[in-house]
Image (cartoon, rainbow, N blue to C red):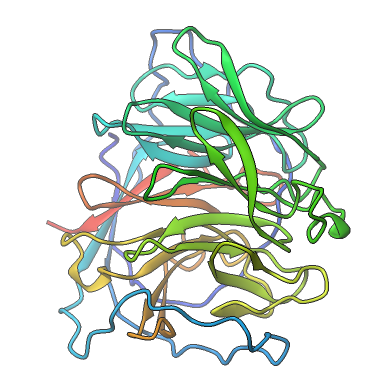
Length: 382
């Protein structure tokens, strides 16, 4: 880990560019067995975390009244005293980090959209068949309790979900998902029963989202052993984040067009309404902030964040924290690191309780700084 830290204020507004596009600017992966050279150290940032800094906005009138708000977590009348947070750089010199995941041994893995899969501290390995282009490439990553690795990527003909085997081969679990230069979806997440969920975009063909015969614009439910994908929810434009609430419910972040970005609670048979409806989530954003990866925080390391939904944004260029009331409604929002690290693609909570962020400044829509792209660690300052 590179000892680079920053101490900053934790709240702020949003801004920046949205969407995805390919931009390859980093050096090629190092030779097998040789670790990439670490980037130069940068100053540390320490921030006071301010709970529930912004009241929730009302749900737009376009939201259907039939979508109930299930319980997610209980609010706290007396939140813990805010922590002073330190941000340190874990690794830099990457190119469009897309997903973060931990193996059963507590080791961090990550994907880069050009086709590289890396376990931190080791040389990157190339995932065969990845065809990067526009927003497509190597995207989602999940690792199960047996250490098996699952990825979603854009190939020559389609988007697909595969299991990477120890011998280097791939077992295809879901394919035939239309690809495009935009709206490929790509996020993977395991459910509490071991089911693998995969988010697919509408591939810039909105009519595919409600079409029961298409795998696009859906969240697919996949058996990690046999595949056999089925539709869990439909009517999605371009989901970029999937995460599990403490009560086991699946939540998603989704890009609207120029309005109506959504945070949704998904359930079997859920219909997001796209393209007829946008902005019908439990939390919505107009103008767009392009929400991406998400995670629930359930650790004592940052006590005032426990039970909160964390998600990062591409256009907003920030980390956001939503808190919930007993009925599942959003009761507050905190905006952190506004513009400080540029576009952010994924957020994950490590086994140590720290929060890890992946930047996406080399995706063709950002302005790369020295050392980008990076993985950052957020934890209380010593």
